[in-house]
Length: 80
Image 1: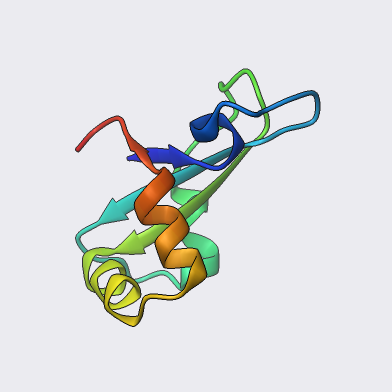
Image 2: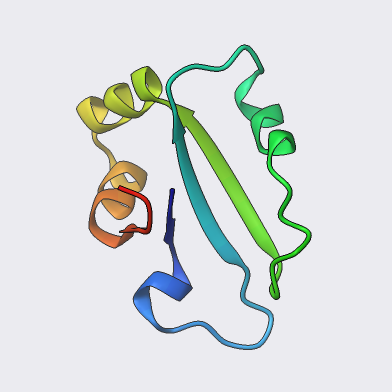
C-alpha cells in the first residue's frame, strides 16, 4: 500500500484527493471494481484507490511510459 500524487509530492491543497495504490497477489474482480473491496470512508480526505495485481504491476513497470514512471518516482510506500 502506498500513496502518490499531490500528497506524495507535498503540493496538495484545498480540493486535493489522496491517490492510493494497493498491490495484491491476485484478484478475480475487473480492475475498475477492485477498489470496492476497500473501505475508504474513514479517511479524513477524499481518496481514489488503484488496485493492481502483482502480475499487472510488473507488466506496467516493464511497459514503462509516463504513468509508470510517475508511480515509480512518486509513490511513498507505507506497507512495503
